[in-house]
Image (cartoon, rainbow, N blue to C red; front, side):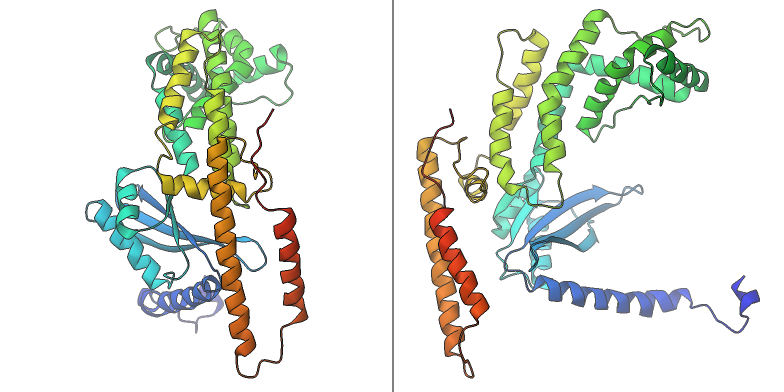
Length: 398
């Protein structure tokens, strides 16, 4: 087509793109990213190991920081094929190489990863302050509950029904009609099939099944389908009651997963209070059935294994103390609140001393004619804020 429109134009060859165009574009983009990142005082990096459809192993490293206009900025720094074993030592070397290449050594880098043992080891070897991804932590806890035999059987029955409606065109059309007639829905909904790597898809599958179960029941009993019992194992009333209770029990974990997946604002200050609230919601109630007690116990047991290190707890508790919504730290003991408050006060004093030295050096620099009025106004505001909005005295929630 191009040859017909403009016969004189010669398309660039593959070698032109691979040897010239792409390297030039990469160099230009990298320079822009480094220029932007160098303005940040602190940077967090996340590491994600994944496998391609060709079963090749990769690791993607992404940086995150707050820009000068108070927006979260993220950059994928690299995606590298990893051919050697993913040991802690190898991962630490990879992370340190990235930090050096992108000139992040003076950015107080904090590492955020999943809960894998090799990544915990990599953080220790590389001496990175380390926080484990909370959404991944929730996934592990929920998966533990979903693997309980009784829950797994319920999921299997719901899944077979869902797969049946996706596979049979005739059943799908009859199901949509029954939704209009039985449930009075003007826009029929689809059943959901869970995905092994996302626990909340199992919750969504059960929740949607309960929402549509009257239409499901009417469809499966229709003589027009002649459903083979070997294809579908129907759920008894007791099964339906159990599915309903499991969905209700998992809802706080589902809500936390959605809430903590927010990408437009920081979430680190939410981890400690949400973690404490989830542990409380997984406490046994007098009326709980044995199945629900098992689900709660599985989730609670797994959560209690996480965020045990003092260094990690310090990061999380300090972040919550600096968030006006949680600065009273009601989820901690009085002794813990006092420790966090003392730590925040000490760090604030150190920061004030650092800023004072910076101002002194700037004032003494050659050609300096005086401080700008704007900065002095900001510093005055900071002093007022420190008096009125610092960490509050310990208090208990009623």
